[in-house]
Length: 304
DNA sequence: GGTAGACCTGGACGC
DNA sequence: GCGTCCAGGTCTACC
Image 1: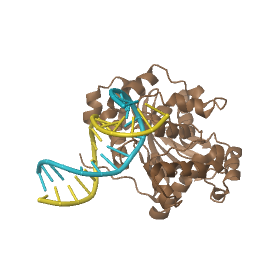
Image 2 (image 1 turned 90 degrees about the horizontal axis):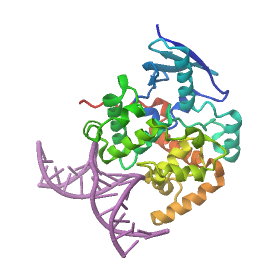
Image 3 (image 1 turned 120 degrees about the horizontal axis):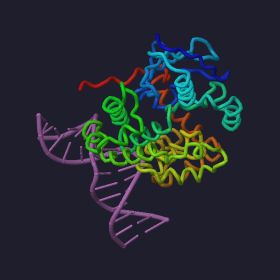
Image 4 (image 1 turned 120 degrees about the vertical axis):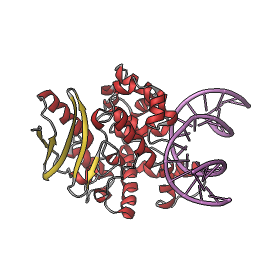
């Protein structure tokens, strides 16, 4: 008999909307089931990996069902990871502040952007989304979980830190990212990444951004994206999709550097929330073409 | 400070 | 089936 947890959520929280708000909800080991409207994932906890299913049978509370029993310590660990993924710490006041500056999202209640259960996983996912198309990102993350993760969980920093570059390159197909991912994992394994400092609201975003740029495999796009994953929305993560959005949706014209300048100016009106405004615009554009994200089927698993 | 080219994978395309 | 081309950010060398 596995453990079950009940997790209270802020009044404005909606599982389907708030999970299916960023591409990571489709990256292994995470999987959204559009039929049952549940999120399945695998956590690698102190006493080993566990598969869990998160459902929202009624507003205001989530039910998490695990495939094994867990100690009280592990239950607390799992609660913290679920809260991180779903950004449950963002209060109604936080959301209201965003909706005041950008009222377009108030009627639908959108604001929370899905992320990973750990910062390490968020950074690896960011690095594996750089310089590659989305199917490649999905493939790399699937292989990382299959090859290195315990029972399909996302690999821990310790496990990745002691992996050989040849294994990462040959079996996980991460290419030139191999040594950068291993070095990053070593930094986490040696506790050289000061997460409380990165999340401290007293620390300015620019300082955190400058620090993130020093991490292996992290450049301007990656650092900006990790900032938003840390809950700091004051900077745009500009990639080719951003430029495409600027041209096709916002109607900006000119050479790419000019477009990016105009884009930054356009989103200045949203101040500390500019990434959220940008991202929800982009996401809404995807949904206008593909349908609501909570109806999207999981990516098919390719035959080996 | 700005720029060019290498780094890899996987998909599209032509033969 | 094979070869070629291209897209995608980061990093380093060079000016």
